[in-house]
Amino acid sequence: MSENPNVPGTEPIGRGRALVVMPTYNEAGNLASIVPVVLDQDPRIDVLVVDDASPDGTGEVADRMASENPRIHVIHREGKQGLGSAYLRGFGWGLERGYEYLLEMDSDHSHDPKYLPALLQAVEGDLDLVIGSRYVSGVNVVNWPMSRLLLSWFANKYARVVTGLPLSDATAGFKCFRREVLEAIDFSKVGSTGYTFQIEMDFRAWKKGFRVGEVPIVFVDRTEGVSKMSGAIVREAVWRVWALRFRSLFGRL
Image (cartoon, rainbow, N blue to C red; front, top):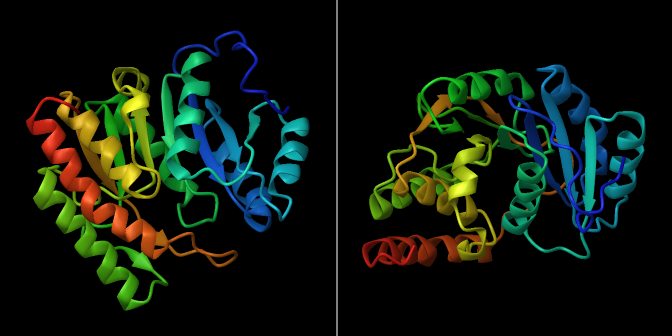
């Protein structure tokens, strides 16, 4: 069933339910194979695909899957609007419908669905935000060239030093929030559009006093499709973390 985000929310799903938000752009070759595996991990999990008018037909694939399974939902956006805004749109959709846990996950198989139960278990325990971490127990990345691996590792080190975040993988896009964390964050103040969005959400949650932590995962680079990483994303990360720190220092976060 395709959802129109401009229509008022449906009946609340109920406490204890989880929503996996998957932003997509040209992921037609991956979506049909990853979503059923996600749903198999826990009967409480639903999937929301947020598609940015993918020219390869990803939106049509999502609609077809949603028409066959009530646990799959779709938001169609006009044009490529960015990762951060896609997640915020999905979070808002899920909060309106009463989901207790909201998760981020890539649709390209780099995030293995088998780790979803561990993420849910962590937030059902003593954490409010849990990261599926590539670096909390060594370096657990497969199929990345050394240049990409070093860029990611140093980016996380840089973010940790500048912001003070107690995380080894602040740029990770595989995570689970308790709904209370997202309700406490003013989405209109979230300014990051690329992968720095991950750092900003972690930082905002941590500065508000929520308990953040990590569980180890193995990250496997995509085998189909094209990575969305770019020089502009890296440049945004360099200055955005300083902006977050200074805004926090002056009480303007």
